[in-house]
Image 1 (spheres, helix red, strand yellow):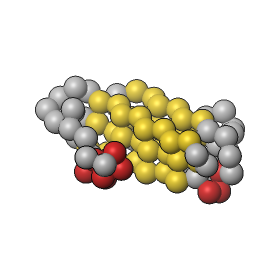
Image 2 (cartoon, rainbow, N blue to C red):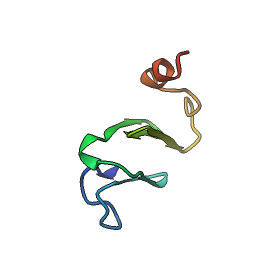
Image 3 (cartoon, rainbow, N blue to C red):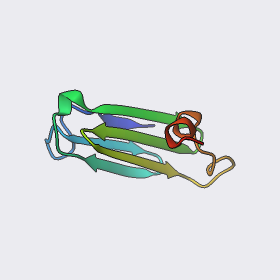
Image 4 (cartoon, rainbow, N blue to C red):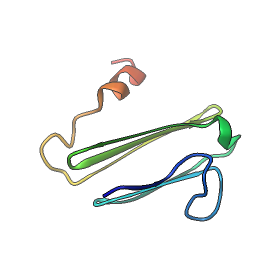
Length: 85
């Protein structure tokens, strides 16, 4: 199960510049300054892992939560492209 407060929405602390993702592996919170209406957010869920990407202005945050099972170390294809690999 994965619950999300998306960019531009109310986060756990009521801030519009916060993304909170809860899944079976834990909780990730990303807070960035800037215009929340212009923030870019991507959340990818796969078995045993959740990856969160959030960009606001010139700042980028990437968080991966996982249970450490098979494939947990694999990087999502879109992240390979972002990193230029």
